[in-house]
Image 1 (cartoon, rainbow over the protein chains, first blue to last red):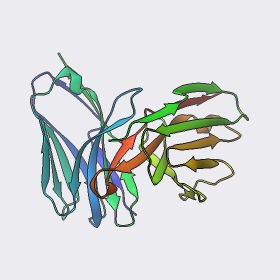
Image 2: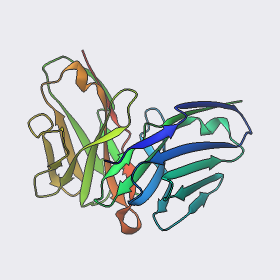
Image 3: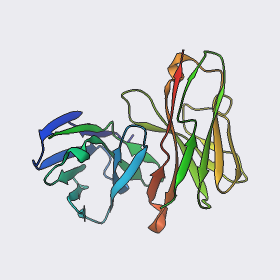
Image 4: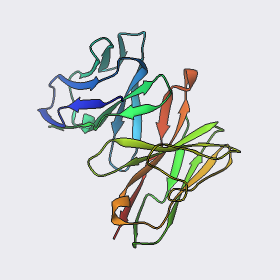
Length: 111
Length: 115
């Protein structure tokens, strides 16, 4: 049974700092991995999607990596800003098409 | 990407009552998904709603408790029946889009509190 774990559960950093959020999964037979941002009252926003054949994806200040063999993904946020404060969720899509979510990392960027 | 409108955004309900959540999409989609996010927990898929057929429920979720309607390709409802405090959660609808329909777009969610 696929399990997705995100560490840490919460993170607080000063503005301008680079940071890394971690996601691990137990079954490497995934179809893709997706990172989301969740803001209170605004649902989830898809940030980056990495296919199982890819190693990384970049969008602006965000870079997501995927190492299927070790069951890990990281989300790197460069030059963090207070507007980056949100909960970040990773989700893996297994071969059966089902999306399994981690519990999220709550990020707070202090001005 | 699709734009999803969900309502109500939040509600406070009495034990034993039922509440219907609506999800409207601005484009036609084949599959719509309903998720539940209990306090402090990750999202869990309740069911997949296909137009013109019965919804497909995940393990632990049953139609009597969470009846779903999908009358057309842009609309779906989820009813939470005979609510108890354990049903207090955020309920989100989602659609798949993008290349290969791999990117999920979510509604803002409906936060239910059951007293």
